[in-house]
Image (cartoon, rainbow, N blue to C red; front, side):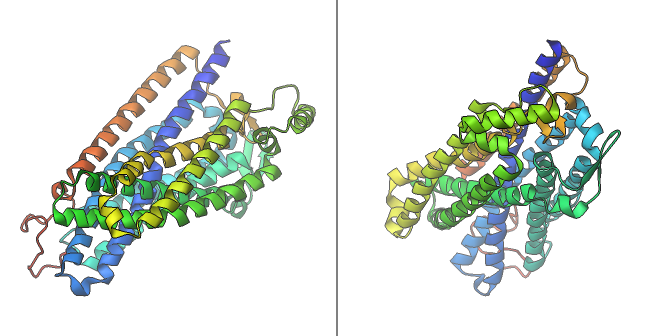
Length: 439
């Protein structure tokens, strides 16, 4: 009984902390791409750097960049904490599949904590020190490594869902085909889906924050112009990004039937097929329940699809409204809708993650290692303490992150410290000879 309770607690700990960490990742990926696009556009049109449009573009980069930096800084702490979980609660996974699984996590650590963090630091502190092109190139490296970091995580997760390129030994599994692991369809399809989900999260976030300031009608004219432009960019980006995300999600659902037929049967509620697969798995692996939680698996899939439908109607309708300048500035019910839509990408992506992970049970490495066999030798009391500490820490980090994000977003561009030249009042064009990235 103690072992069963410890397993349940360990699964809850991983589920809660992984889902919380992913809330940071999705916004970080999307905002990094959004800010990189803004800064690249500002650099390309530097010929009019003294004009109002150029100053507005520079302030957009700084405002949304500050929100990105806040989310990244707090999110990276949750990533560090996540690493402790594998050694603390899931040592069996490391012993059995560490030669394959651990290599991908190690590469992610190198990319995220060394390359990405270094270049982000150069970008943050490089304003007014580097020329505009070099400063923008730094952010391109940051964004590229952010996606590379996500890719390595999905290589590890893709192997858990669809093991390829390995051989079994007396003490576990060993890597035999690195190319097969790196091009695992379970990883590549998930990567496309996650990339789209991150952009979608940022689109709804930018649109919601912009709508908040337009709804209040208290911002200076320069800030109002900034938020009108931000809202239009975000709203026009949402429909194609949503369709991209849905396309990769649909292909993943089709692929599930091939490498995870039990999950496919459960979410489709095919009772006869579930019974047939259960009998087949008992014959192959011995007695046991090989049917994942139907409530979690099917429920998460339905939530994901329902939220997608709501977002699709809202995104397409918003794109039509954004074609009218007066609606962007004056249509307050629409502003309220955009603010209310901000959490929906988080809900959809969390539901998708639950579907992906819960549907794999009772396996931690599909049809190779059961979840109960991956658990560390910990008592239920120790696991309860660990769960309390981890969830409390993550809850605190989430609260701090959203307080900082909302506080910074509410205060607007005038209070942003990122990239500010102390020699020039905010909102006024620089006339100095320095290579100032005001673009």
